[in-house]
Length: 225
Image 1: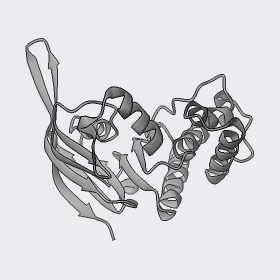
Image 2: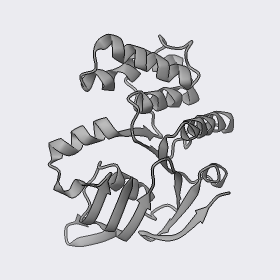
Image 3: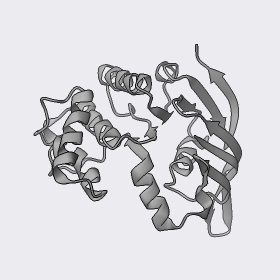
C-alpha cells in the first residue's frame, strides 16, 4: 500500500544541518498493523509525518497505491490526506466548543459530504468506539480516554485506507490506554491498515510487526505471532 525509497529528512538551523532520517526504505501492505518504536530522537515521529504527507522529505520517494506523492502539488497532497488518511495524535486536537458528534462530523462536512450523511457517519463511528451515549458532550465533559476515542472516531469516520497514530496512549492512564488499544485491534480485525508510533512495548506487541528505529534508520523488524 505504501512504500518509501531512500527517504531522507534534513533540518537546517543557520549553518547547522541535522539529518533526522537517513535513507529509509520501507513498505507496508494493506491490512497490516505496524508499530514503530525507538528511543527519543530516533526519528519515529518524523518518519510518521513523512509517510502521512504532513511534512516534505528532503530526498527520496513515497509511493501510495502506486502514486508517487513527490509529483503532487501541495493542494493535491492536502486533498489526498483528507480522503485517504486518518490521524490520531496524543493531544486529541478536538475543538472545545463542539460536541463529540460535531467534532467527528466536521472533517466530513469539509470534504463535501451532505450534512445528514456526515452526521450519521459520525454517530456510527462514535458508536464503534463505545461512545454512542456521549454524542452531545463537549470535550471538557469527557475524560482523556474518551476524548481520544472521539479523535479515533473522527479519524476513521470517512473510512480511510490508512490510519496513522502518533503516541495515542501517551497522556492516558493504563485502563484508558488498554481501551484505546482494544479499539485499534478491533479496527485492524475489520481490515484497517494502521501505522502507530509508541514507546510502550506492551502495546507494540499487539501489532503484527514492530519497526525498530535508531539514529534515523530502521535497525530491525520484528514480526509478532
